[in-house]
Length: 311
Image (cartoon, rainbow, N blue to C red):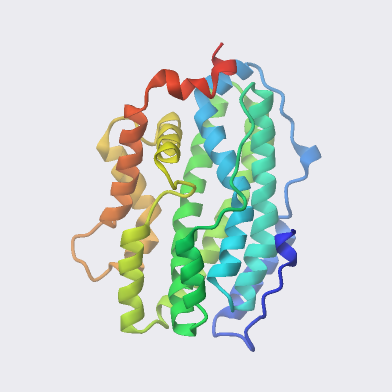
């Protein structure tokens, strides 16, 4: 079933701020269409070295990008009556762009001798289904929307940082063609997504009541996690990816710097009243757990997935 054909009844009229968001989404769609597959040059000088150095990164990022299909299915359940601009953004702009990113990255890792991605594009958790059912009450759906925007902020900021690191790393390896035609076009599209979530989050946060803000803070603290991480294996994969990118190299100060960048807007919105707080503690803790799980993961078991490239 094509997710972009799932009918969702739009709200009548527009909320204040929707016009600015709608203009932004229109520009994203016009200026950043999905990357043409024939524009990508997968020429590699040392595919074995590329796979050894960045295999964990390609594995994690291709899977996460391809899983946006499930993310849209989740959003259709989580937001039964969303603002029209949200629906247009995630179904008709974000989904095609991100899916194309995943296809391109997956093709790169296959050509480098790695296994193809195995994304989960269908399974939706019971918790999300329950929250979606509660979301038929408009006040609850606004809480869900705020959580959606916050997740988008963290996800897209993480993506920008990761693609910048990957681009630089590929250039250092001498893989300039792949850096220029695979990673550079992808990373150009991510800041526009981040900007969307930032505009939407700031607008909605100002409209929430005190009890809604309390609920957002409570749920966010309890549910935050890196994108695409829902079990121990995926947590270790994320940890390996950030280690391969040099985001986490055993120095807690580096990881704290990363967490601050990812959680900056979230801190400004949700926790500005907490003096001395530089980053939400749950953001740093989630990344620290992932980094530690990557260190603890047995090397042979990890490289079993990348055995062809290693051999």
